[in-house]
Amino acid sequence: MKRGARLAVLLAALAVLVGAWYLAETLSDREQAVTAEEAHEHTDISVGPEDDLTALAWDYFGDAVSLKRQDGAWTNANDADCPIDQAKVAPLAEAAANAEAETAITDVTDFDQYGLADPAFTIVAATADKVNTYDVGNPSPNGAYYIRVNGEDTVYVEGTMLAQTFQTGIDDILALETTPQDVAQVTSLAVQSGAGDYELRYLDDAEAVWYTDADPWFLLDESGEPVMPLDTEKTAALYEMATNIQLTQCESWDGSEADYGLGAPQGTVQVGYRSDGGEQGSFTLEFGAYDGADVFVRLGGSKMVYRVAGTVLDGLMYPDFAAMRPLRPCPLDWDKLESVTLQLDGETYEVIRSVSAPTADEEPEDIFTLGDRSLDAALVSAWLRQTAELTADSRTDPADGRGELFTLTFRQENEQYPEVTVRFMAYDSVHYLCAVNEQEYYLVSRTGADQLHDRALEFLIELPEE
Image (cartoon, one colour):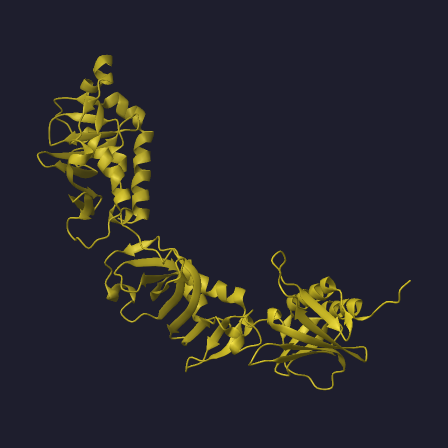
């Protein structure tokens, strides 16, 4: 039975409680005549110690479940492949092993008044030498349930959680799957769908194909070659749709492909990753048919079918790669920087970077020189950090006839891009046009670019001594 149906049943039970005052007046005279001594002497109606249990079965409003215990583990008696969560069965076993009655109403002939002529559901618990069958009827006036054991003519007011605990179905005790929980670093994302296939890859040596290793994610072409760098945070937002997917709403533990559109999935997502221990691993998600706002999904190689929000598949099938491109106009390997030439206000300055020899007590430090003059390393380093953090508002196309304002030329230890030239040109009242190697074009804030210009002058221009 689905959760919604169970909720309706429980609401109906609450409606019964509203009429409890009436039941209290019309119940059997035997219940009203129970002495105070009898009411406090609880009756053991359990099947036996929990460790001795060998089987549990119940039929909760059409959702029949049958479990057996083998080698200390509970399995589905009808299908050993059904994944059972042992922790979820534990409360059921505990309830059967500790069942007690607050009240015993003997010699009952009219079971209908207790809801036991047609029980709401039945529980069977067994040990190696004993079987108890519990018919569960109506709630009693105190909120417990009327129970009949083994067809006897006694009705018990069950004082433990037996009836409440077994108001569950097979889907409530399944061992649900998860995506791998030891993902330390996602390394690839490959999507196949009717909307088009694509593959993204994390490159440990991104500087071999791009200006910098600061943008290690790339879109691959059909031959598997990197063709477009992608923003790290935006790429993470994409693959996290798959790595963070919550497989909590199980639709079927042995779902047939025909029922859920998984015979020919409309979307297949494969995630490659490094584990916490450094091992390479992967997992696959297969997306079937939409069902309203949801979509059916399963892990590759599994029979279990889950229901998740359709927006997960939508986001993975239709990424906007143009919007995912990095918006940093100065993409450099700063640790490999050798020099920077600044053309500002009609003057040219070449700043050389070197690194001090490490000592036993000190870390190596950056040294910056302009000609024969040493520069303030703190000011230069701060300016380089600000340059690295400069972010464009958008990418754009080249535009002719723009007056050049200032230019930065970075030289770095990079075989593919040993030199990167960044030109800032007039554009409009808000932006400068920024050209990187005459290949990438950005619109950057005039304010941000002007700050770079002005802060450079702070370490380039030598002020006269007072």
